[in-house]
Image 1: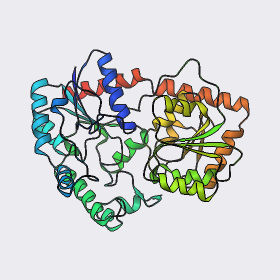
Image 2 (image 1 turned 90 degrees about the horizontal axis):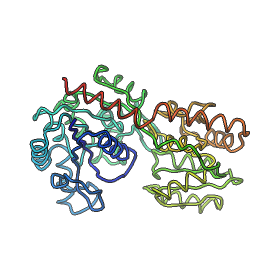
Image 3 (image 1 turned 90 degrees about the vertical axis):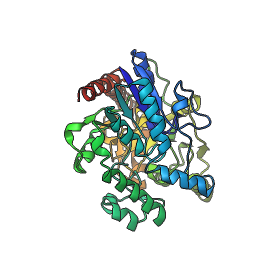
Image 4 (image 1 turned 120 degrees about the vertical axis):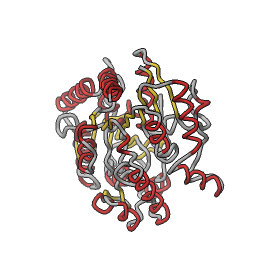
Length: 404
């Protein structure tokens, strides 16, 4: 088959981008022709189709005119329409698989594909179809009931605490609904049972939703021995639970702690370490590749304390595949990966004391329990998150929409 893969970034910024590239490479490995469409930015990966990529925009940087151009692209873009139209005419894809396209690639992506008769598959990587701020987070807490209507988003300033940004976010979400964007998608891919249920709860048709969980790194035959550290490996963002994590490990001074990541909460983390004299906490910046592997290898316990709805955490999958112990918040898709007492420990979300309790249990678990959990976690990854199984499932969805 000839499949058009679409994502707003053509470099790895997060988990959804990782899945995007794994999908491309996996499909090519199976003999499919994969066509790519994205936004071109400095430092991106090379692509044979980059002449079709659209110019970069940013809502947070550049001159007022540049930010205005970025704001206009949220709704529609003549450049996206023209370049995507030419790409489709030149390559004739059997289907398009859209990952994250909102804002930088705009609703024009979906409108253009539908106008040209290209079947659309869309992986729902976050809460954007349901919530203007993509997370249902308000301040430091999950507040779905306060953000489950567009007007509530504006009233509660759900986007960065800004009325203007919240109004823009609500307007974007309204535009998608008013133009019937989601009705133009032939199949939605939900990366967890949790996300599938959420989509149905908010009125998306169950018959057009397929659950396909993310693929994980290969489960190695020989894994490194457990380290002795508590490791946080994610963006330093409130929604990721970094403040909950820091409060939880503040008094666990008998253990060494690694905080690997960067983001808007970096200054808060550094100040918290300084104010509380946390000499047992080591701060590292963003790590990837060998640096990420090293951080995982040093861990006894990898902690994923997300307060938002994490749909299918790649950090959890990578930790389980590598035979690390995992502590996670009992929210979103986490309980589908971390089965409490079997493949790891769950803690109450937004509760530093309960998170500290779960971490302490992981750090003091007896050897027989450790061996059982490691084996169960690796078995879960092997059975449910194998790349081959993932590709089988997406191929089946492509075949479905091709027949629509």
